[in-house]
Image (cartoon, rainbow, N blue to C red; front, side, top):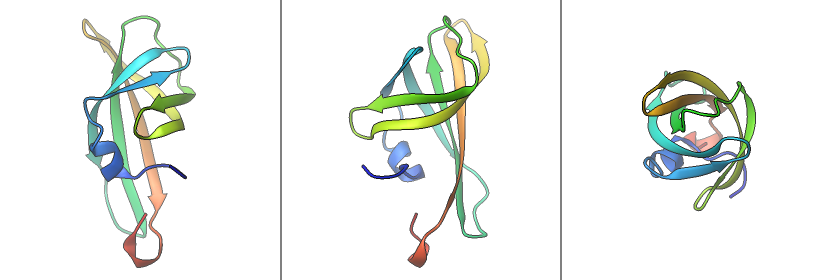
Length: 100
């Protein structure tokens, strides 16, 4: 897959896991649409990983069976008994014809 997938491609993968260097596996829990318009597609991804280790915010290489290898900036946003939650936020320009 060339370039970064859009919101719909990620939404189709909710519930699946991504292998992440240094963090193990992260499960994609949620894809949330952000404000649309002004020629941009905006959305966020919420992942859950194990409680330990807790990764620092930064760019990680995520590998997924359907989406391939992706470099994504992740921010740890919470930790509970079920593990650590990470968020990625995107604002992508919409190409000609309204497609990303």
